[in-house]
Length: 152
Image (cartoon, rainbow, N blue to C red; front, side, top):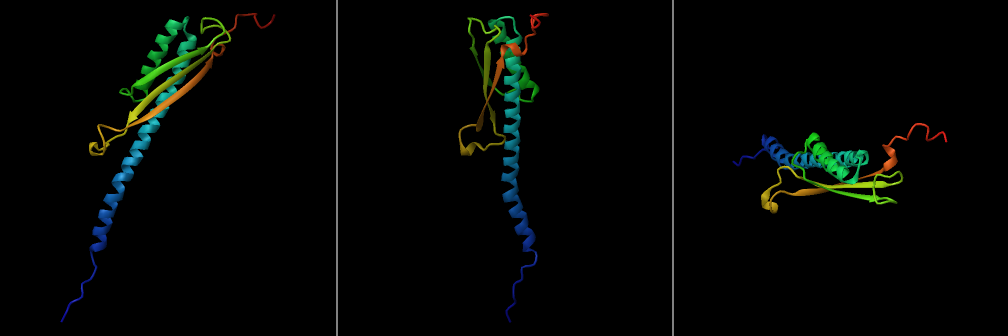
């Protein structure tokens, strides 16, 4: 007499393996998305702070130093102290100085974040995701007019 084999108990094992196989990549994707989003917020805030720091400086050289310091500080404040950023400041000015009334300052922050737990067998080192942010500041936005200048 042959005995029939039943499937009792195998659904739990199949479900467990399926959960492990699907859950691990999904968790990694979610963590990577959050890391990229955090880096994007940090780059955007850094560009905005750098534009404001440059516009409020008394001259171009001081503005450049303050803008770069603002980028470093904002990235550290946003929880990305290891995030390296390149800052590029351009100015559309009618005179030789970027600190005249009709100048437009453009700050671009190029950065990147490393994806968490990226397996080294898939490539060399860790995978990086490039980010950039641009902020445009008309110089008159943060400069107060002299009292009585608008009454004339």
